[in-house]
Length: 115
Image 1 (cartoon, one colour):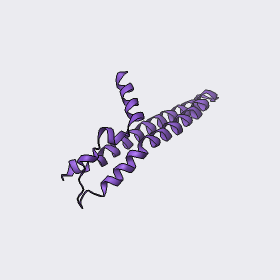
Image 2 (cartoon, helix red, strand yellow):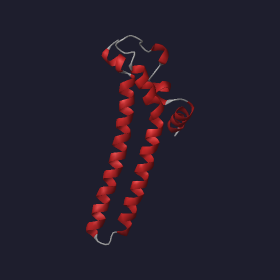
Image 3 (cartoon, helix red, strand yellow):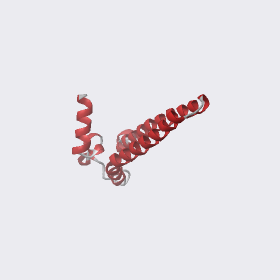
Image 4 (cartoon, helix red, strand yellow):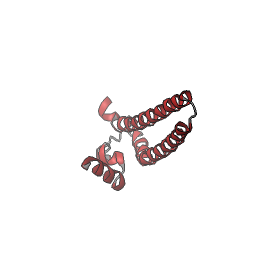
């Protein structure tokens, strides 16, 4: 629980990438990686809103599918609604993970491929 509290305070108090992965003081400024600073700053500013939108849309869609599951009249319709609900949950989790990994990768491109 302490980890979640620290993560929430980090997200609220600082920008996510700048706080963890991206140190603007050590960022290379040459021709090879200088353009990447703007990309990282954009991803940094858009990271939390994208996750909020993803969670909100996924939550509303899960509620809608849960209502369909509860209102299913036959076992076939209930099984179909259950499959769709599981697929949405997996898709939301996978999308959040991919967004996080994209941010992590972009912020560390100079470290990965060398300066």
